[in-house]
Image 1 (cartoon, rainbow, N blue to C red):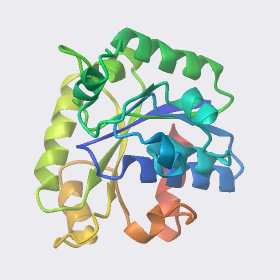
Image 2 (image 1 turned 90 degrees about the vertical axis):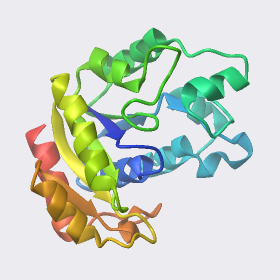
Image 3 (image 1 turned 180 degrees about the vertical axis):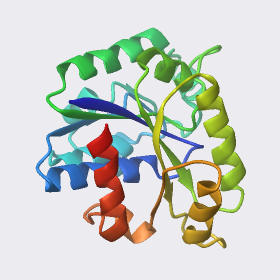
Length: 229
């Protein structure tokens, strides 16, 4: 039994779609999997099925109802801003210790595999002094780092890895999710990052839709991740 934290080099790099792809793969091979995304900004309850927790729930085989979303994402904010700023817009505050405790409870209650998706990049602020990285440090889980394939992602990815390694956090894999419209080929980005760190997995954008399952080399790479975790 294991738990894995999915983080990213920044916002909108594909964390949720990677998590959903991993969920579908695990279910396809007969593994029991659960997922939570404790903190969500930019959440519109009128479009719940399109939200990050809605996508995770559908990958898990559950309807994207508000009660189900509440169960996996207790901290939800309407503004598409950093979590601390989005919370201030609603005269609310995120208790970072409560976020870590929520994750720890889910870890302890999991049946087999639990995926925890973070919010934003590795240092997205949750309050005036702490970031989502503080939650990762409290949990001490193995990580999957998600990056995009846009121009500039190599530096962003290596900077994120440096911050994680300096805190003795374990990175199981780097998954590069293809950025729509990027001028840089996915294969080139994967190869470049792979010269500095490994393993690096490229996930083409067509494999990130709500229904598709990973295939070929991506599927084999996913198997290696969970076979070693």
